[in-house]
Structure formats: structure tokens, C-alpha cells
Amino acid sequence: VPDQEKPVLAVDVDGVVSLFDFDEPPEEAGFELVDGVVHCISFASGALLRELIPHFDLIWASGWEDRTIRLTELLDLPTLPYLTFGGTARFGSADWKIGPLQEYAAGRPLAWIDDSFDPSCDAWARSRKEPTLLIRSEPHLGLQSPQVGALVGWARSLEFDADDSYSGA
Ligand SMILES: [Mg+2]
Image (cartoon, rainbow, N blue to C red; front, side, top):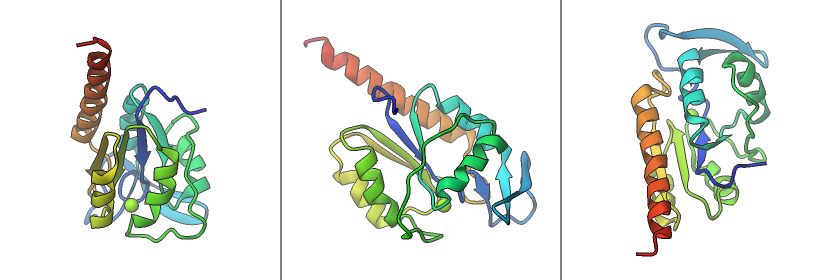
């Protein structure tokens, strides 16, 4: 059951947790076999995602779909829900995530970290009535500490705004 009190955080896998486009193997990462394919998994991203759990309702937003279950073991994460895309997932793009994300996060603030935003994602984010934050990752680095700081700061600013609106000013 999602925690309706917290903003949603949609987390991509390829380019956020599973790294590519690097010249040298990244630090704090390792090659792991997932469903018959070798991926360079950022172990650093696991620790960073754990820092975000108190502040957000996390959901995987990736063509990995049920393969994300393996990531919970590799990254020592609690089981997280994942979106499904009915066969529309395409590597290197993200517009196919918008419909399912809109449905999942309807009426709630949403942050989304991904390496493949295109203008349709930016336009959708601007069109949402609820606070919406897109954070772009670099596929050779994945999730990084400054992005976690930005996300936590954003989540806290929402709490502040909510408290403010109850003050009856
Ligand atoms: Mg990606």
C-alpha cells in the first residue's frame, strides 16, 4: 500500500542504478547477471536510494519491470512496487512512462529520476497541477549524492508548504 502522505519518487533503472556509457568500470559498482544479461550495477545507488525511502514513496519506473525484484537483493532494498508498460518500453527514451506514471501519481507530488527525458516529459511535468520535479542522471554515473540532497530538500519544501497551508493565514 503506497504511503499517500509522501511524494512519489519514480526511479529509472538503466542510467540510474544500472550504469552504461562509461570508459572505465565505475567505482562502487559491479557486474551482475540479471535474467541472463550482465549489467553494471551501482552499489552506491543502493545506499542513496535507502536515504530517500524516509522521504518518498518509491516506485521503479523502468522497462525492467519485474526484473527490479532482483535489484532489491543486489542493493539491499526493501521490496518496492514497479510500473508495467504493456510492451511499450524502449531503451533510451522515457515518453512511454508518462501514462502509467500519471495514473500512479494522480493527485500527488511526484519526483522522477531518469537518464532519458525528452521534451514531452518536460512538457508533461509542467502541465501537472501537483508539484513535479524531474532529475536527469548521467548514465555512466547513475544516482549521485547531490541529486539525493536536491530530492530530500524538495520533499521537505513540500512538507513546509503543507504546514504553511494549515496555519490558516
Ligand atoms: Mg534509463
